[in-house]
Image (cartoon, rainbow, N blue to C red):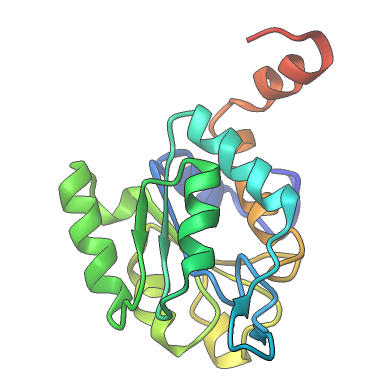
Length: 185
């Protein structure tokens, strides 16, 4: 997503510039929303590597990332650990409450948080975050509350789209590109 996209108005870009916390639902945002179980009952989740790299990039730029999910899954803990995501809340029924408490702990205002979710437990957080985000696979009655609906679907680059857009809005994009083109830091 480019900052000059008609999907991102100047007010939204201004709000993206203030984001210091990116909070993400897991199922339907970091994954495609489907639950996979092996015959022995072990749960499997598929995460997109592009999303993971985007998370690493925004963390390097100083944006805190958190996972706030209603389900409990060892795979979420493993993915978070692999990405260096320190704030992981599983079994979270009241996601806005968790988001508020995390902002308080981090010394941030709710307006400095972006939240991406795709279902009813996410609506309050989407509505109250400084930037509320959803994905195309979310029901229309969820998407209507978001400030921005990504072009990419959950589990297939939606989080990377958010991360890239945050990096662009906050002026980090050229440094990120230079790191990979020229090996600079």
